[in-house]
Image (cartoon, rainbow, N blue to C red; front, top):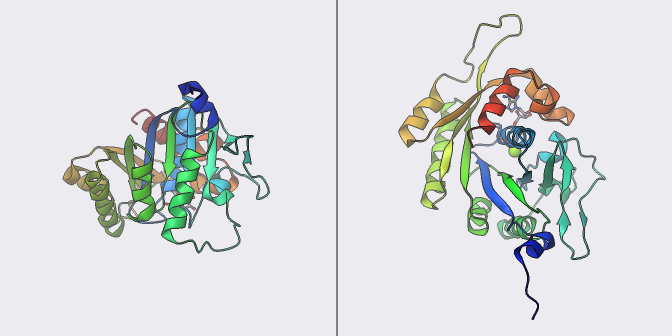
Length: 263
Ligand code: ADP
Ligand code: MG
């Protein structure tokens, strides 16, 4: 039989050339996981690291919109029928959103979603990467479990807003990862405060104050970043380029670059 070198295996597909798998997770939806995952990915790529971003939120994929990928642009397969990620802003991208019609609701059951996750990890040409960022769906269900069973997750970043309902779910998420033996790198507090453009030295704590600090202390994990609620961040997400690329001088972009230095 033919022997396959590690280089050949990497060229054929799969994630064996990935050094670090960083999962971006949360208990609750809508707290900014995808925003954090996308900005972390581009901020790492800006440092010269080789980066991929895999969006496995089957029920609410965000990468196509956040990276401005037209509906008719889909990843191709190579001769070995391995999926070739798209590339934007120096980041290799795959998203569940590439598989489904964006105008139709996904009605997959857990096992189907789980097998799609496995395919995107094992049957895609990721090549050699320093980081593969995984944008997870909210919660602690099938997909999260499949993921930790499919890839050796290096660490997970938990995203929460300062709100009690979000923190309670974040706590559950942290416990799930700890139970499955995945290291929790820390918590990112998103929408931590709001500074009105005409009052640049004010901070308004719309969703509560210091909640994530308390959770971080309680769970004995670091607080990795506090990201402000910022119009530029929301607009960038909707306009097809993460804020770190689109508004590199914004407060959020600075915080994302610091975060990239901490993972
Ligand atoms: P999740 O992936 O957790 O569901 P998203 O990253 O999709 O959350 O964020 C939900 C919405 O909130 C998006 O429209 C996004 O642009 C917006 N958003 C996230 N973080 C911020 C922020 N720091 N400032 C302003 N808008 C934000
Ligand atoms: Mg999301």
